[in-house]
Length: 87
Image (cartoon, rainbow, N blue to C red; front, side, top):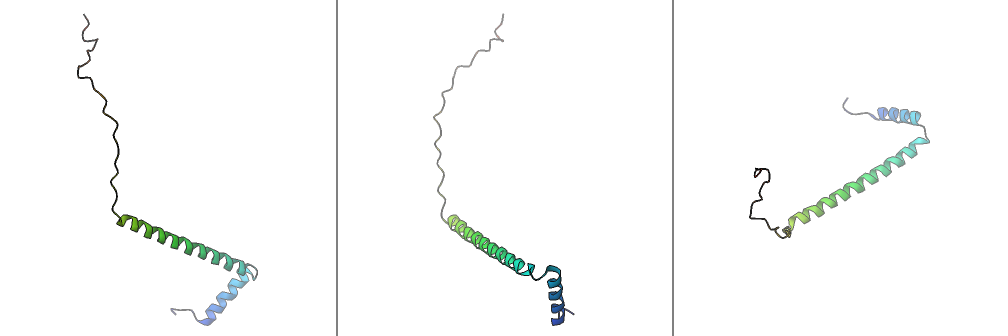
């Protein structure tokens, strides 16, 4: 009872043919084939991108050097607060 016998497969095929019709089955198979091709190409592209990233991470990273702007001069004399010196 674990697997389907050939008669079960024939019944399933006849039901699919009756439900979807003979005209729609080739279109459905074509669409499924296109989808699988796109899926396989995307998967291989993802794998190649992963290989490129692993190659880049294997190379030592160059430290980022950032030039700082020149230091702004600061006043060493404290500013007088006019409110504290009111008479």
